[in-house]
Length: 202
Ligand SMILES: Cc1cn([C@H]2C[C@H](O)[C@@H](COP(=O)(O)OP(=O)(O)OP(=O)(O)O)O2)c(=O)[nH]c1=O
Image (cartoon, rainbow, N blue to C red; front, top):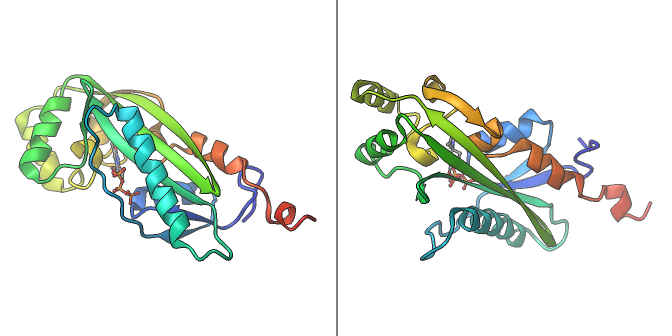
């Protein structure tokens, strides 16, 4: 449905993340999902903000290029990283890695950076930065959480939208940004799209 903040509908979402799909649905945006693959390794000396921006743009561009020339839809892509002491924690590779990530996040604050990019011929990108504080976690709590399996496919090995909510004593920033798609910034990008009527010159 075309709305004030999303004059073009449907758009495309270059993401396999069920969280991003749920968040976009939450704000009433209709979309077609595109499967894209990009290399997610960071470059030497790359700052976290540059890293998430680069990947969000790469995902959206890959989605844009994979569509047929005729009738291309504007494409959203996003990338999330958990950052502690300037180090990027991506998704854990296994349970031991996940346990080490949770131990590191325990009893302190970290940043969650999510970049969202929109490609529609031109490229626009916005960045959301949140600060999340975890209570101190005992080994028993960490292991019980890992046994739930919910952190294994998430940056930083936790999900704010799941049982890890029990660990978060403070959040400054964007809940949806931590979950993977900052809805305020996404709305700002979508608002800039032309409507189909404008494109047709009506
Ligand atoms: C910190 C945090 C991350 N996450 C998720 C959001 C992202 O799906 C994932 C970060 O990985 P990403 O590499 O940003 O995304 P992805 O591989 O899951 O999906 P895509 O196909 O769009 O590349 O972690 C949560 O769901 N909750 C949280 O609290």
